[in-house]
Length: 296
View 1 (cartoon, rainbow, N blue to C red):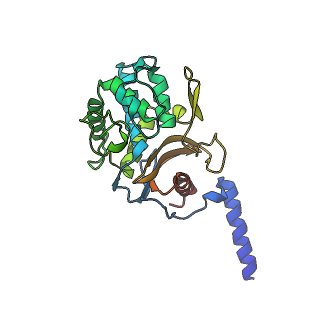
View 2 (tube, rainbow, N blue to C red):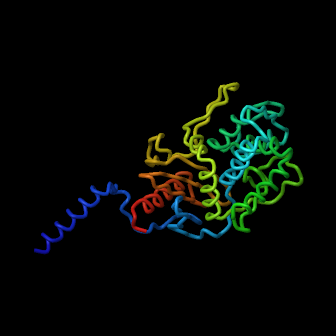
View 3 (cartoon, helix red, strand yellow):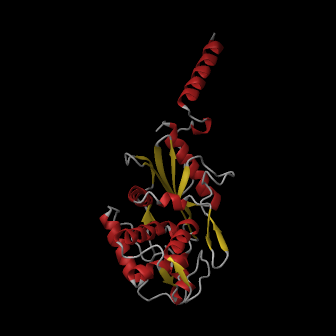
């Protein structure tokens, strides 16, 4: 008798799953996250569905370029710059470390080319070139970054010190003296920044979801650093994922701000401090599965 009831219960649960369109890999409880901090937000309601050390500051590396992207889009919208404007690479921009394209001093690229490279490939030399083009100096651009952060309600813990998120030791021998200190962000602030960016400039998702971008004059093609894009396929691809930003710091680990939309529901996730490149995507999958399962 007990076995019959057990089987009936399992069958009923399966029918409910099929009816609701819930995938088996989404049937999870609150996940344990292997990272220093993590946050999951429902974009429409702004409800925080999961918060694990979300208010602790960390060096976010390339994730901080979300603010660089926001200021570029602000400048385009305000008419201060235009997509086809030529940007000349400075000595400083050409010598920054981390992920870069080895852009040479004096080379020129359009704002559009450099923006796409920053959003998709997270190139540091491209980010510095854009910052200098918009504000004449990176120092002035950093001031604008922090003013924008305050204006959109980010916490005092989040402080930008350069346009790239790089530590001082990776900024190269031509770093201006005024560019000092380490950029720090909280996972909650990264989530808020991503939401603001997507809400006000939804076209960012068209850029961040590209599998690769190119610099035609060099014949170079750069693949997206986001392995969760649904268009990529592979073991880390996640149905509905279309962004948003990766980062890596040798001291704080691997980071990822992701966003996925399914059936009209968009989630934004942040994973800071994963131990591996692959791990940040695996932990993000746990967050998305939890958010879309309806079990929170």
